[in-house]
Amino acid sequence: MAKTILIVDDSSSVRIVLATTLKSAGYNVIDAVDGEDGLSKLTGEKIHLIISDVNMPKMDGITMVKKIKAMPKYKFTPICMLTTESEESKMKAGKMAGAKAWIVKPFQPAVLLSAVEKLVLP
Amino acid sequence: MMLLPVDIGDSKGLTGRERYDNLLNGGDDEFENNPRAHTTIGLNELCETAFPVWSRQINSTTEMLEMEITDISVAISTMAEEISTTMAICANVVAEIVDRTEDRRDGSDVREKMQAVADALQSTVETRSTLLDDVKALGPLTSGLEVMANDVMEISTQTKLLALNATIEAARAGEAGKGFGVVASEVRALAMRSAEIAEAMVTSSTDIQEKICHTQMSADEAAEVEGKLVDTSNQHMSSILSVHDTTMENLLTALGELQSIDVKYKQSVSDAIIALQFQDRVGQILNNVSQSCDGGLAVLVESIENNTRAIDFEPWLEQMHARFTTAEERQNLRNFMGDDSTTNEVVAGEVSFL
Image: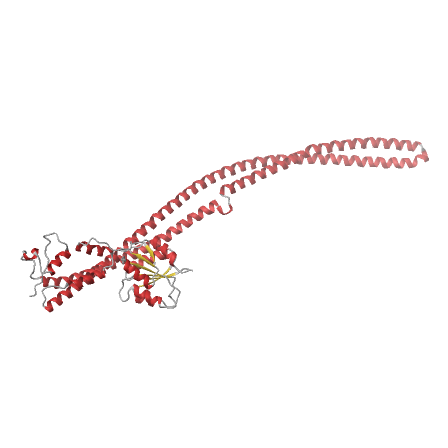
């Protein structure tokens, strides 16, 4: 059965290319436009991985990660940040919040899929 | 009208930061000796008009950019999925044809199967030839049977003569030879019966020989036809195998080309996906510029309302700096400020496991 990945990004073009990349590798994709929307998509179904942007309107990625880590059902769901933020201090903030990986855009499909394979829940 | 100081030139090759510092510290020779250094009439109106317009232009540009790039992304994604599906179907079909033709699953191939058919035909011809040899071998046997029948007839003739003599001698003996005469009569009857059987054997033997001869002729004709059939079959099989070899060669070439195109196509899609993400980076930068314009306008309005001659740009600059997300934005600021230091940046595209 295909594994499900939630992608959260306010850029529609990024959501599209990210979904295309993940679907080509056989993953199911659910998408959300910001942190709030991302949280609303966590309705109890198993999510094998979350890939999220950092800078988004309404709720940023770091805040969303903190809230997800406080949810019993999803606290062990791995989260990968995919962002234009390249400053190490921001990456450390992501780590403190509970993110498992940090990728600075633009991502390379093969590199991203390799990371997803390592991160995704069995 | 509120007049604000403005830095309009870089006559000494100073950095932006140095020029701002000079401005804040009350000016230096550059500004004191320059009658236009401290005030520029109309700057307020210019800023009040330009900043909002710039901000709106940037926002509309960002929206247009995102809309267009989204459309392009959708088109490329759709094409990528369709091409990927098509390529997969083509590759599977060709691979299936090659696999079935070569029949790699049981280790044999079409050539071996065709050869098996040819061998079977040849074996049939050989079996028929052996059978024909066996039939030919019956000829001498039937000839021997005829000789034996003739011998029996000869013996029968001799026996009949012997029985005749015995009958004559029995008659001479009178009453005493009466019983012997009966025996002689029976012997004569048996001899005649043997002669009849021998004659029938000769007739049958001749009949069998004729039939063997006929069978032999038919078998020879059939063998000739089968030989030609085997030759024709071998020629056809060679022709089929030749076509098969050419087809296989073409299929394998096509499969190789498909695989090569698939690799190139996947690389092109990967390149397109990387390139399309520029919109997100550009959008972030433009959004920051727009917000900085709005912030600059707010500072200007506050300065006008408070009737101050100098803008307190430090907090605005710090906010602008804090909004930077990309390495390019930070580097541009450092270049402007004459700061040659570097910050620790995560390399784009690489994965950092935390």
